[in-house]
Image (cartoon, rainbow over all chains, first blue to last red; front, side, top):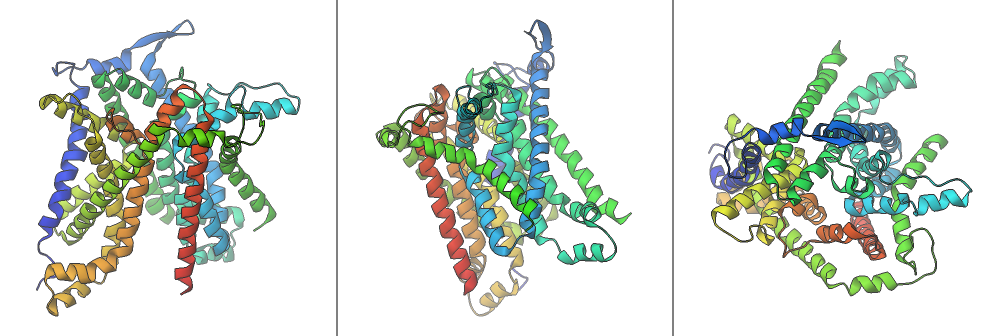
Length: 286
Length: 263
């Protein structure tokens, strides 16, 4: 009998139908709402509103949504880079520790991950508030209080804190599996620590770095809770804009922004994948 | 470990745990202040346990998470077996791509996309309230399914394909071979998938936020509504309880891990 080639259709059917109905069709609806007006007539207005709508900020006329969008990208990139700079050494240290220490550190990394990110963000709100713990400490040692809540820095702190474990874990899991002989070989062949890191460890860990970047960048760029809590509301990211239009029942414009965000993220991810593929499979052979 | 690495690691974990420690300490604070600890009290825990809507939202969250877990585990395991047996490359590639979508798309887009479809369906069927427990359940099953498949499919690929064949040669029906041979073989993946589905559902806020109706609140949505207006230490009490539940669960799972390895 040919090996198990039979009734796979019956097993696949429920999931295929489910995925078509609840994954694919909803995305079609995003596009449909994005390109229609309230009476479902075709229009480009929602899309063009995103690129052209203006408002006055500090006496200057600005492109409202373009400004919001660039700010979201900027803060998400800053947070991702900070997570990578601090997370990579931690992942490296973890992967090189004893098995018992690795297990303990894994558990420690996962505890904050399992706590809801609303609570984690909220914790920072209490710390960073003008009358919060940070300013309490600062005044206790005799310095003048700082105003952080409501600024871009507060939002970056929140993003870094919330998504830091998502950077560490994928890099760690790649590094823990890495063949130690490759590192020894590099050292035998005359590499010092820095060049071993640059020429062996880092290229091999790139897939982990890539998924870490993805796992931090995507939720950061689309968040709305972090900016609502730590940005004090007056401060808008693209996620806030989408959520705001949803609350105001402006579903067509919300869909248009979601559509644009989705397209831009797809392009970014494809570019990043292309780049790492070349680094990992093309570049190292040269 | 060298001293420098030790200090670095300690600093990173200090950064991760200091905010949580602060929440826990201030959950026992007598006053409402966030920076001054004025005395030990269980006042906020009492208030929390007298807060009907919050307790109801905990029950709702568990009901939703268990339902989503059961449905997505059964459907996802069946789908994995189907995908494993599939020979048609084009169909396989399409299914893989579609399965990846909920994992790579930002939650806000998954949430908005489902909400738009539910609202549209509600208009067609002239429902007054198109969002309810059922729309949330659909949404949760949808984002849990890929995680179940991600866990089960590799286990199928690792399995020796001659095992279920042998069972059938020895007189098992295909269904019998699946339940007697294949399923026990892939069980670790099924269990991990189920646990992941359960925790993803428990933890989700963004997708729930867009697909929930007015009548059905989960705990994350309740937390969102509680933190909307003002800072309340009741939240700290809740966070503290959640922290210790997670800590206990992780420690139990770690202990059982070490035990099974020692055998």
